[in-house]
Image: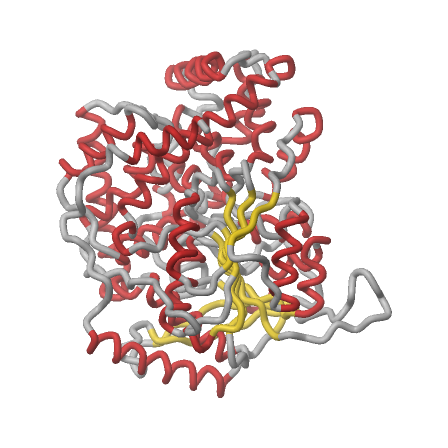
Length: 585
C-alpha cells in the first residue's frame, strides 16, 4: 500500500512534456514501403528456411556451456532497412530445441507438436539464445513436449550485426559514485559523458544506427516466423519483449496464433520511453522499501536494523565507507547501488544482498566484492548490450533535448524516490543528444476480432514494468486476458514458482484456453533467509545480468548448472538497470 501511494505521489510531480510530442505513427508512405519490404523478406526467409547445426560451430554461446545434444543453432537473414529489402542484409543468430513429444506425467503418451514457441527475454539488448534450455526445467516440460523452443539474438545483440558505442575496455569504470542528490559539478560531468557516448554510437555504427529500433525488431520477428516455417506466430515476450510483441500484434494481427506478454511495459506512445523511465524510477522506490521491510523482519539474522529506517541507515553507512575506501578497490557506492537495484527485479536475490551487506559492515568485504565487482571478461558483451539498449530507446521516440527538462523532472522525483532516479537518468541521458533520426511510436491497438485472444501476465508490485503498463496493454489489445500475481514484485512470472500462473500459461499455450478477462493468482511465498541465501547464491552464479547486460534492462549467464542457466535466460532482462549502469557510471 505504501509503495502504491508513493508511486502516485511521485507520478504527480512529472508535469513536463517531451520537447516534441510523439505522433502515433510514421507517414503512411513510409509504413507502406516497410510493410512491402517485410513481406519480401518474409517470403525469402520462408523459401530459405534456417539451416540449423551444432551450436558450438556457429553460435556465440558460452564456451563452458554444457549444451544438450538436441540444441541447434543457425541464422536468419533480414534487411537492415525494410524500406529497401534488396539493400544491406544482416543475420540474426537463432537457437532451437525441437519438441520432445514426451508427456512429463505419462511416459507412454506421445505429445503432438504444435509448432515453434519463440521467446524474447527483454532488454533492449538481451539475447534469448539460452532460452531453449528452459525445457529441462519441470515448469517448462509440458510446453517443451509440444513446442520447438526457439530463442534468438535480436538485431545488434551478440553476433546479430552487433552494435558498439565505445571501446569495451572503457565500459566498466569502477569504483564509482552514485549520489542520490548530485551536485552541479557532478551533473556537468555526466552531461559531458552522455554527449560523448552519443557521439561514440554515431561514429562507431555510422548510418546503420538509425535502423536499430523496436519497429524493426517487430518486423524481424515476422521474418523469423516465416523462416521457421510457421504460418502464424506463437510468441512469448518478457519486459521490453512485450513492447515489440505488442507492435507485432498491431502490425501483423493476422499472423498471430498465440502471444504471451510477461511483465508488460506501458505501450502508450506518450510513454515511450522518457515517461516510462520516470515511472519506473518511482516504482523502484517502492520495491526498495519492500526489501528494507523484509530485511528488518529478519534483523535477528542480518543485524541491519529492526525497522526500514534502520536498514536504510545501515545501507547509507556502507555507502559512505565505500566512498572513502572502495572494497577490493573495485566496489564503490555505484556498484553497491547496482547490486541492490538488481534485487528489485527478483526477491530471490534479497537474502544474498542482505548477507553481503551484513558481512561488509561486520568487517568482511569478500561477499560484497564477489557480488558487486565488475567482471572484466564480460566487458565486450556488457558494452554491446548497453549500446543496443541505448540505440533502441533513443531511436524509438522523441526525447527532451534540453537538459533543463531532465534536471527539473529528476530533481523533483528524487525528493520522494531517490533510490534509482538519477541512476536511471544517467543511463538514458545520451538520448538527449542523439544524432540519429527518431521514429514516431506506433499506436498499439487492435479492434475486436482483429487479433486472436492473448495472455498478459503481471506482478502487482513489479517496479521494472509498473502494473499500470499491463492495464494499459490490456485495454489496447482487444480480447486480451490479464492474469495478475497479487502482492508480488518479481519481474517476469511465467515459468516461476507460482503454480497458478503456470497453469494459466500452459492452458493457453497448450489448449488455447483462457480464464476470465481479468483474473489473479495469490502471491508467491517471500524468501526465507535460512534457505534463500543459498538459492540467491545459485541465482547469482547463473545470473546473466551480472555480465553487465543492460537489459532493462537483461541477462546472458555465467556459471551454474544447465537448468539454472535456462532459468536465467528465461527471465533474462539483459538490461537490468543495475548491471547496465554499473558499466557506465
